[in-house]
Image 1 (cartoon, rainbow, N blue to C red):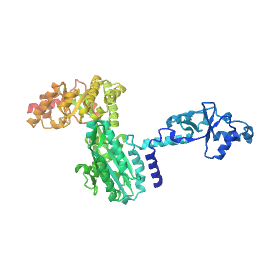
Image 2 (cartoon, rainbow, N blue to C red):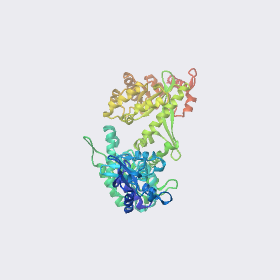
Image 3 (cartoon, one colour):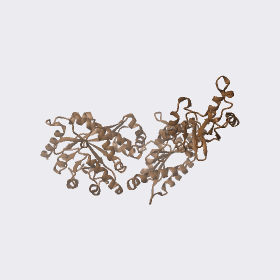
Image 4 (spheres, rainbow, N blue to C red):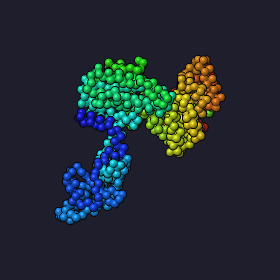
Length: 603
């Protein structure tokens, strides 16, 4: 695609983003003639106006029928060339087709295409008649399919929410843009909204969506027609600037920065945000043989943005070079994670949970695991925030929920009645789909609620409490356990415990790490256990690594424990081998408890 065609396509996308909605724009005005009009007169109209494709024939007081140029020419040519003589005395009404279709304004392209394809093959691609308020119009079937193809292409390449080109467009068209651009005059802005998560958590998703739409509009206004504004996902955007020097690129970035700082009105609220922007010039980066120019440029700008975040946000940041950049790994994670779902490197592992009363592994925790060919093993705390910010968390969560339910059902069929814990986030609750999604997955795999526990962690918005309570209550009614994950962090509070109907309290590993060496930490943990039990909750400790910790957890009344001492995340097959023994056998869980008791005797 040359530069002129590229700009023409971008202008068309801006002017007609909803061109695909209806057939209205495709109609061309045509004259109306009485049914008794001689065929010769109609033929003369077509000869006088080569652009005229059809006329509307008044066949009765209320009916208009389309008579196309093709149909008239077919009749007049006839067999052996005698058609004109044979039809000289006929009228327009006598040439009308038997198969008659009338379209109305507002009809979608999809509906019009179905009507066309539903006609007999010999007339399938003939024009259609549209009766508009300002008179009859002819609609070309070929234009319908062309517009429909444009609609599909637009939908595939554009973000549903903001209307901006999406990551797919950038991946497919970005390399061509760079190939025809002068590296000395090509820049990329990597834009991340500051405090967007706080807006989502405090005011809800509708406010968050409104912010994204408004910022997308402002971003377009800050750019030239030849520049590309792209929404990568979540609150991350990219601006690809061609034929621009460094000074002007910095001016564009400053304009974007100022636009983000203007309050965004949603209902009665004026939402204050800002942005951090990473700026990279194509001339400043060294191309990588394994990565394309676009990937390297994105990584460089992403690293600059992350550096800007670290330095205080609300700024335009440059990187002089990638060497020694502390954010190089995170920037690479953000780029590599996009393909993790498709290439099968993102998998589920299971961590055993020891029940301290029965000395057995009665439940497990599902843990996401990512082995990337370039990055190696990537921990969940590294890639889950990336998934959440890029908008990938929801599809990942649904896929993992389905996989976990399938595995739990398979285990139960094999005699292993493990309840599987799956961590989610408050935004799934806020979206209103958590309970419905969970119950649908349970039903799909014929698994009862006792096979699953949903753990919720992170920040709860006070405005979402009633909604979250209803969702969790629905899960409990279905037999599903619901746990508060990460209690002891800044997000886990007594107010949340009192407001929401949890069944389990999962204490963060930070409060478990030193309970066997710090009286203060042991006292704090003891208070948490007493609080949980007073509220009717089971208490589980995370991060147990030493036998003395296990002994003390039992003494303090903790109900369950997970951590390296019990066993790290492992495959489903390995979990069965190590913890699926007959109840009459000691098993690994029993051996761990015995080790804890031995430590107790030694001390």
